[in-house]
Amino acid sequence: MTNLDPGLDRDLERLRSQPIPWDDLREQRVLARIEAAKKAPAPRRQRLPWPLLAAVVALLLGAGLAFVTLGPTAETVEVARSASWSTPEHAPTLTLRDGSTARLEAGADVDVLTQVDTQIRIAQTAGAVRYDVTKNPARSFIVDADGVSVRVLGTAFTVSMLAQHVAVHVHHGRVEVRRGDRVSVLGLGESIQVERGAAPEPEPEPVIVVEEDAPQRPAGRSKPKVASVDALQARADEARAHGQLSDAATALRQLVRHHRKDARAYSAWFQLGKVERSRGKHAAAAAAFEACAKRSPSGALSEDARAEAAASWKAADNRARAHAAAQAYLRRHPDGTHAARMQRIVAW
Amino acid sequence: MWSRSPAPQLVAVEPSDETLVARVRAGDDAAFRLLYRRHARYVASVVVRICGDDGELDDIVQDTFVRVSQRIDTLRDPARVRPWAVTIAVRITTERLQRRRKRGRLRQAVTAHHPQMSDPRDRVRVDELYAALDQVPPKYRVPWVLNRVEGQGLEAVAEACDVSLATVKRRIAEAQRRLDRRLGGAQ
Image 1 (cartoon, rainbow over the protein chains, first blue to last red):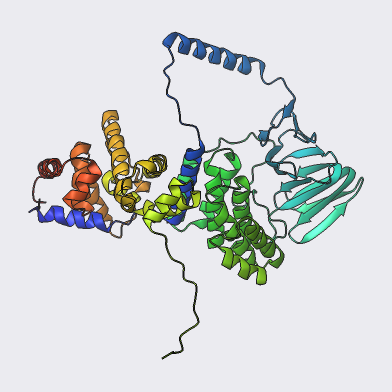
Image 2 (spheres, helix red, strand yellow):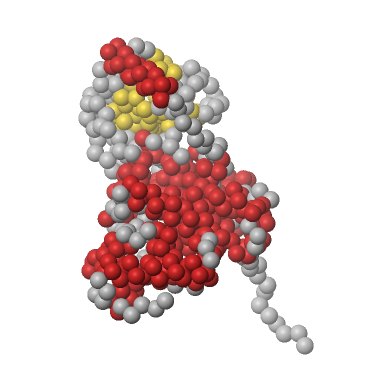
């Protein structure tokens, strides 16, 4: 089976010398997909009979035509868990699961990041939105607006994204406005304008969703078409391969923001944590790792993500968050792979 | 006679493949992750060598380990989980290569997906080799790559391809003959 062609042998040597495009991030990403596939029910292959297929296509076409002709009629949108909404022309109201509402003015753009019993978290990227929040001491309600974090203490208020500032006006109740380590509590009728943009680290209230590297979109314009998960992942991989960590972070942030329901967003959070840590943004890394673990608490990456979050908080010199993250890890994984490392962080 | 020795330390002991397989069979997800981390890179390297690009690498590795998980009860020798996983990966890769040929997409690779090489001329030569391999049916191509590129022995190739030793020898020879014809013999 030997080959007498020395040219081919040289080519084989070249081929063997190629590095395998497989790193720990890719390994983690594929593992997350495997875990998701293992949980998913086996796909059933069925062939639709042609007449039925034709009927379905006709129905879909009809429905599409009706939508185009009539447009959306409901002005109130009930949000099941998360949603993106951009309103160039009309102003719908998002109704959240706890009964709180967010009324969007023209051009406003919000994403509901988290909607669970204990927390509602919204990212507002453009325009003005009035929030009417139901009172619930057991649930935190937070609006992230380009580096400015507004924590609701039971109230109604409006957040407006201005060119250089984020403006907050309280209609009733109280809110806590935070940017980095600066905090202000506003009461009835009070307003504040806070400079936009992420605060320097360490960030007590990390902003984990704002696209800090992406160009700001002027309010009032319609949302640009979002790239697919595959395209964003490929862009991130390519950027990482070339050491362009900022570009990689931007692509991953867009992925987790615009495709949060996609299973791959879970591993993207983890990758984002690693990328942020590589470029020395430890608080952002910690926030991304925490978002990863939070998205799927029992997921394949979540144990690692909890440990990395604690280590990143430590690297960010945020003792309180590092302790909390390490203790959270130890509560959940008392015999985990990183238990000894977490004990050291707790003792730090 | 007692001698003074350093204080004892706890040393992590890596569980064997047999232990991990037994744990996976008992439903231990952590053991499955360990098994995956131990063998995924090797499986990925085989897939990349066969395909010549990593355009479908994630999908193939994913499908491979999903099948490993689903069929681990059928593995007769738990110590040989790696060659068994490679056999699964080779089968999946072969199916995908056959689909590529049917679709006429002989090279699905995108330039950006190619691994970085220190000398771009090397990339050109490797591309030419894979362009020739694309003309070789997968049933000949796969054993040839496993043997000639991966350096696997004929028995291992036969096992990975799930064919007899005689068949694998014949297929590798046939692949070589076709490649020689495509590449014009000496280069």
